[in-house]
Every structure is written in C-alpha cells, then in structure tokens.
Length: 385
Image (cartoon, rainbow, N blue to C red; front, top):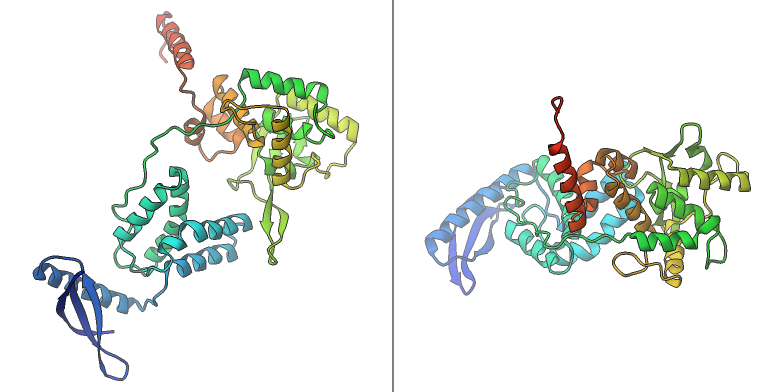
C-alpha cells in the first residue's frame, strides 16, 4: 500500500491526531488516523512521519494484522505439530497464556505492539507472580515474537530495553533436615511403610530420596532400566498427565523434563531396596518398578501420608514428594559432591542451575568451609596447584 501523504489533523484532549492518506483498491481516497500523546505540534509531525515509514515498511512485507493471542496460539500449535514440543508443554503454554498473557495483551496487534505495552504487562505480572513465573510467561511470548522477527515480519523490535523484575528474595526450597530424615527413616524402617494401607510408597520414596528422581520418572521406570552389574539406573522417560481431545485427564509416557537421558548411579541404600523388591515381586524386565502410573496421584498419596505422620520440611510444612528430591540434592551439596556430577544425576541442564537452587548460604556452612580453606593455606605447598 502506498501512502500519498500524511499530516496532523487536529489537537485532541489526548494529544495530536495524525493521518495517513492512501487509495484503496478501487482508487478511492482513504484516511487512517492515529493519536499521538505529545504536547507540541512539531513532535507530533515527527511521530506521524515515523508512523508513515513504519506503515510503508509493513505494506512492503505484506503482513496481515493479527492479535497477540492468535499469533501465540498459532506459533505454539505449529511447534507442537512439528514435534518441537510435547503435549504437556503445549497444553501448559496455552493454559499459561490464557491467564497470564491473553487477558493483558491478547487483543494488542502482535506486529505493532510497543515496548511500553510490553513493559506495562511485565510490571502487572510482577505484582502477582514470582520472578521465575514472570520469566516463564514472557518466554512464551518471546519465542513467538522472536520467530516473527527473524522472518522479517516485525519492523521495530519492541523487546529492546525491557526491564524484567529482580529477584528480591532468595527462593526457599523444602527439604528434610537431620531431624526430618530420622523421622522418615523410622516411618520406613525395614522396608515397611508405617501409617499407610499398603507398601506402594516405599520404592518411590527410595528412588526420590536416594536417587533424586522426579515423580514422572519414578512412574515411568521399568526393571530393564536398572542395571545391577554396572550399578546404574538409566532415566530415559517420564509419565505425564495431559488432557485428551475430550478434555479428560490421561497419562502418557514422554521425554524427561529437560528432554535428556541420564545415568543415576545407585548408592547402597537404593540398590539394597531395589534388590529386595526384585526378589519379592519377581518381575519381568519390562514391568514397571512401581505401582504408580500417574505422577500426580503418587504426589498426592505421598502428601497425604506425610501430612498424617507430621513429616515436615525445614519450612514447617509437610514434605512433598518432590521435596525428597530436594533433600537428595541438598545433602549432595553438603557432602561436597562435585557440582557437575550432581547436576548430571539430577538432570539439570547445567551446573549453574544446581548451584543457584541448592548452594548453601547458612552461616555454619560458611564457617566450616572457611576453616577448611584456612587449613589448605596453612599446609606446606610442595607443588603448584
């Protein structure tokens, strides 16, 4: 579309109203209006010229108007169709969009959205959600926007200069301290779960506490994933709850959370528990190790059990099933395990993530570590580091 002229039409209560003059397909003269929130006429003229240049560039690119909501839905659905994301991620992205993106900026023009609009959206989210959640919501928008930008569909990058919320408080994780661990040991003493109708929670507890497995990974584990000869467990899949086409909850087996496969070496406590279970149940190699198929049901059952038995984390609330994984990781850091090895066992993408979540910041740990460092300095150095 070619704009024949542009100018300032009149001053309004909201600023100066500019226009672009063009001819439609039938050759009839038409005007497009936009109000500029500025005090002076000279500034409005500058803005209307920039608007004209922008619209001309858009017309050259043959871009069709679309809203933020439609653009994001189309992008996420496209990624799902190509197999770039699994069903769980697809449904999570759409669900998060429906409460954290679309109500705020869903009706905005996707290709013309401004930095100010994006910043206002981020600021609004920061008042309601934690920093990590805001970053997650923004990432959904950013992936769709970045794709459009690289395709040349966006003239001016509205993401430039955006300020994300700062993390003003240290994230606290729920894990079992020595008192909590002793209580847990007393509740599972001898391989029998105390205060439960059956023993179905025992092996899942061992896998999470002694191996750092996630609930979905526990539910997907089969006996042929365990190699006693090499003393390793091979984590390749995870069970996940999704909604089918009719909106009903179903469980499917898919990739792990980070789409990676990993090897978890067994400590004696976990190895002994698995050997005892194998001897008792005499399973086939393709049988599931645990009773549970749905990780949400497993988490719920464990939560009810920990609540009944007042098995509390360091935060003073009943420990969750995922809290057992936190306990494994926390003790791994305290034992001075190599961080890269710990990150690999946990299935983290990098060691930095493990450090950010689990690195100790308590005064006692710092005092012990500085004394150990002092001992190293006091030693006679016979060779270079």
